[in-house]
Amino acid sequence: MYGCDWDDVTGEVKGFEHYGFDGEDFMILDLETESYIAPTPEAVFTKHRENGNKGYIDYQKKYHAQICPEYLKKYVNNGRSFLMRTEIPSVSLLQKSPSSPVSCHATGFYPDRAIMFWTKDGEELYDNVRHGEILPNHDGSFQMSVALDVSSFPAEHWDKYRCVFQLSGVKDQVIVLDPAVIRTNRSKTASQRLNGY
Figure (tube, rainbow, N blue to C red):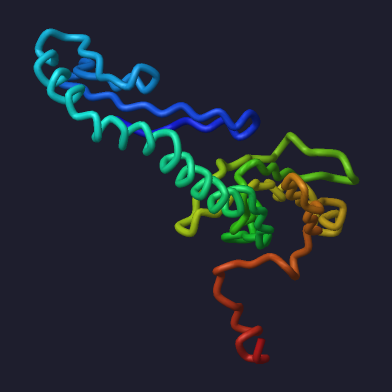
C-alpha cells in the first residue's frame, strides 16, 4: 500500500509505503530516515537489500513528496466539479389505478441530500404518507418518491395538496395534486378512445 495524504489547508504532505504479508506488516518505508523498517524477522533480509539501494530510496522520497501530491491535487480538482455539482430532478406525479396512492417521484437529482414531502394548506402531512428510500440511478444521480393515499378525501379538495421536493442550494420544486398532471399506465376508457383522446 503506498500513496500520500495532502492537507489542502496547510499544504502538508505525508507519503507512505507499507508492505504486508498474510495480514501483517512486513516492511515499512520511513521517509524521514530514508530507510526501510522491518517489523518482523522475516523482513530483515529484504530491508537490508532495499536500504542498500540508495537510488531507489531517493526515487521513492521524490515520488511521495512531489509526484504523488501533484497527482492527488489534480484528481481532487478534477473530481471536485463532479462531486460538488447540483443536478435538478424531474418531478412527476404517478398513480397505478384510481384507488392507488399518488406517488410524487423525483429522479435525476444530485447530491443525495434531498427531502420530499406532501403538504395540505402549507402544513406538512404525516398521516396517509409513505416515504420511499433515496435510490441510485445508473448515471450517478438519485431518485426518490413519497406516496399519498388519496382515497380518504374527495377529488375537489385535491388542489389543497402539494408535493414539495427540497435540495440544498436549489429552489424548492412544488407540484399541485392535480388529476390532469398525474401520469398513469392505465388504458384509456372506451369513450376516450372513440373521441380520439
